Picture 1: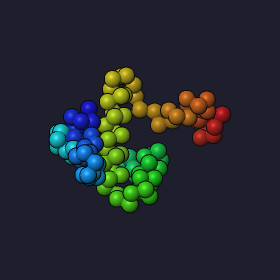
Picture 2: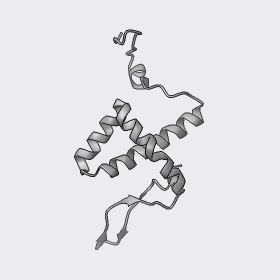
Picture 3: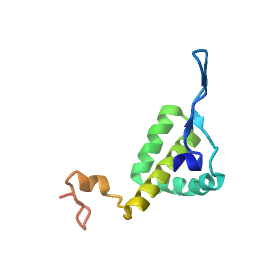
Length: 109
């Protein structure tokens, strides 16, 4: 699905002498990439998990757009997985799988 959207990584390499920086291929559906941009920005500003991933990537590379594209790819993979499993998004999924559960008042059990 990521290669269909053009969000897969393309490495430029020729033998041992030429090694370019890896980039996204952009050979996929540009409309799909374009439609993932705003949801990625919304996920970064409203979901703590994506906000942490964004901050970590910006700290590592210093390029905000590169981090936004990484979030786009993560969102696309998440949507595809949820569609295939016929499940709804649960933002407490990781807490639920570790044995912790949120109560109605927001405390951990």
